[in-house]
Image 1 (cartoon, rainbow, N blue to C red):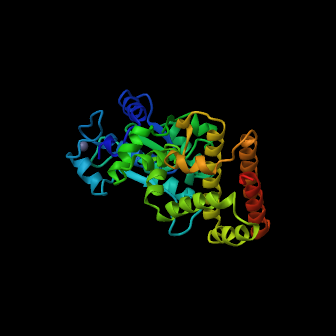
Image 2 (image 1 turned 120 degrees about the vertical axis):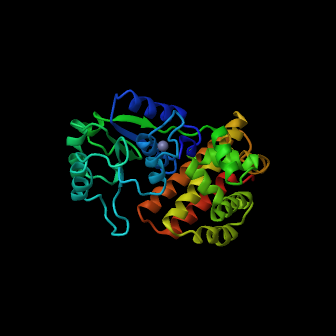
Image 3 (image 1 turned 45 degrees about the vertical axis):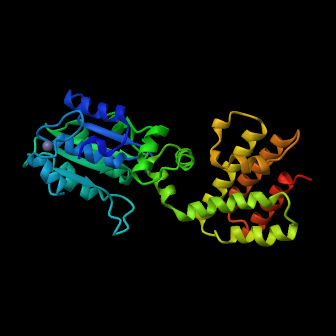
Length: 339
Ligand SMILES: [Zn+2]
């Protein structure tokens, strides 16, 4: 496995390789949101660190440590995370002690180093404290690679001893390559997924693969298409039925987020700002049709956006689903009616 398993992120890769090669740090923290590829990068880095003939591109793939690594049987590389099977909330501190703190002093068996890849989001304070001795007095040839969404949950004593490498949002051209490899080549959709996922490859891939998401998006546009002209009773039956299909928390959140992004686009169009700012650029013609017109178009879009946020807050606070959704629909109809 070379670093090519992760598209882009060149500066993160170079920083890991150079810092390790120059012996400037033996402990690393790789952060990035879910789907950014941080665990993939940590694996490639672990293999690079145990490989007998690594290059800037990563591990060689043919030496004994590499062959063992790729078979999942290199005893010099350990992955520590909480057990999802046993529904553990955190990685047990005894495991950190047994599999890491007490293990680091044993010599590597096949490789020039021993590497520990730790899901740091799974560590509570005790678990982090158990790492401190290894961070402070690392035995030679031991590498720690912590992986986390952000550094926020880590103790300052841990943070001060690691080389922190952040994964950045992937630029559109990288996401285009990633989506193309997954069979998504439509330029409009690629641009949409890339923006909607805020440059996070795993999120863009999940969106592209989800028929539910595509259907939800079409549903949002069709709702907005009829909103301005729907009668009150149509809105409260058909419009409500669309929401009623999505009663689970994740789906309603997705729906409101989609709705909010379309309204934001309508605001962009209403204020004649740069069309490059549009998230749903492939739906531009339709959005031109449904957007509020006239001198107070921007104010109406902002009011609609505020209504969506109010509904989101209401649902989080467990107000009646039906009341909240109906209020939102009526408020949006008011802002989007062309009368
Ligand atoms: Zn190798």
